[in-house]
Length: 318
Image 1 (cartoon, rainbow, N blue to C red):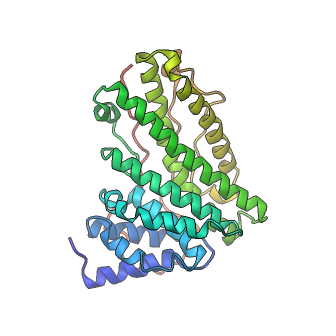
Image 2: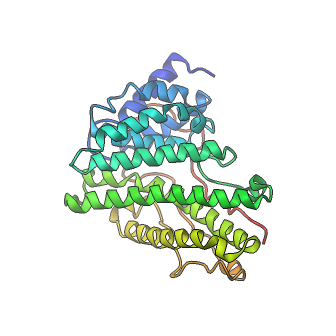
Image 3: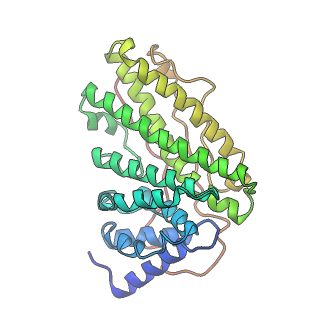
């Protein structure tokens, strides 16, 4: 479905304002309007037609905020947004290369963010039944794999790779905050930190998926065959735990997200009874951004409910 001239104009305004060159986090209302636009246009084509005209290669703030906006679109936009964005991977890679040499903290962050976004796109391209939001209904993960243990073995590897890129990005963001002595309570600090929220939102269900997959693999394959998987999981577990703990301490995030908590120690996958003790980590998101107090509005945000629900827990049979 094509947009009317007015809808296209409004979407152009929303995207342009979301990725403005002002060093401040993108406003919720502009993100919401951009997401709504993808539902009106039945996919990501209109979004990209407007996005590629933004000065992404001319301004590092625009490039950074565009990555954040795209991440939100892939997570919460029309289900076809991931598929429609695949053709633009080259542009993302080139933007990462262009800004990667910059020494002000943003450049290397943009490089890592574009890499993560390409990884996300390719993950969903290989696994089209897993939506961009990573929210699956109970039992859906088992139905997707159709009981094929080789599928789960490979899916675990793909999830590890995806989580590696999330961990790399968050480490780079926190390093830039420390290196350049940027306060998390300034607009400049919040501009850098805001993308950590969709990173938490992505990593949380991915962690849950891979825990359940690992128990499934250990119930069906020899333990020594899974040594590499256990080592990668153990490393990622401690990295994610550190990421969540560091994020939880940010005053800026207090009213934006309740960061999940991981247990003190990783699950023991060689002990199947540990699955019964496993509890999926939980994220809580508020209904709106209290800092977004500007009353100006481009489009009515009541046209579609974009409130994120807590993702259902996928189930795998023992």
